[in-house]
Image (cartoon, rainbow, N blue to C red; front, side, top):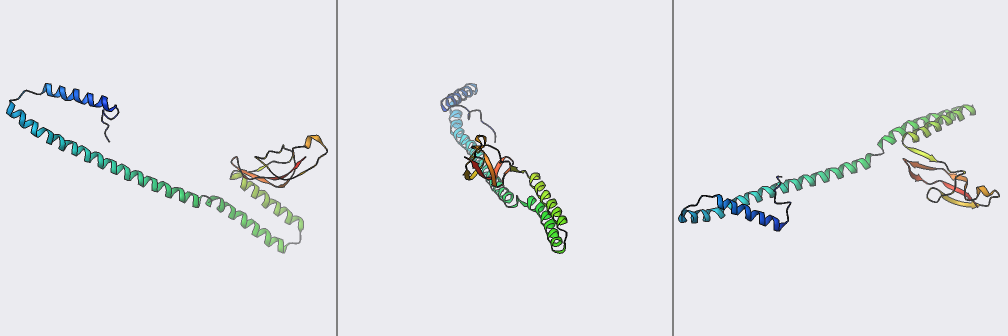
Length: 195
C-alpha cells in the first residue's frame, strides 16, 4: 500500500496544500482559446473522477486483501495455540512412560523376591529417577521446615504451641510437600506452624 503524503497531515493543512498545488498547475498550463478551455473543463472532472474511482478500487481491494490475510493469520494462530495446549504435555508424558516401566519391573520383582533389602534399594533407585525427572522438567520441591511462615508460600494446616521463642512463627513440620514449576508454585506445602 503506497503512502500518500497528505494522509499524515491535518485536514486544514492538506486542503490548503492541495489548493496551492492546483493553482501552481493551473498557472503552468498553457493558455488555450476559450472554446478549447471549456472542452478541457468538461473532460477534466470526468477524467479526474475516473482516476479517483480507480484509486478507490485499488485501495479498497488492497484493504480487503489485508483484512483477509489478517483474519487467516488470526485463525491459524488460534489453531496453533489450541494444538499446543492439547499436545503440550506430550513430552512430559513420554518421559513418564519410562518411569511406569520401572515400576512395573519393580512390582514383578517384588512379588517374586524374598530379599527385602534389594527391593528397598530398587524402590530408592526408582524414587531417585523420578525426582531427577521432575527437576529436568523444572519442578522443584519447596523447602519448608525451619523457614518463617508466609501465607503466600505455605498453607497452614494447624498451629502448635512451642517453648522455644525462635520457633514461633516458623514452620515446625510439613504434612505435604509443595512444588514449584519454573518459580511458580503449583502445589503449596501444607505445614504446621509454631505459635
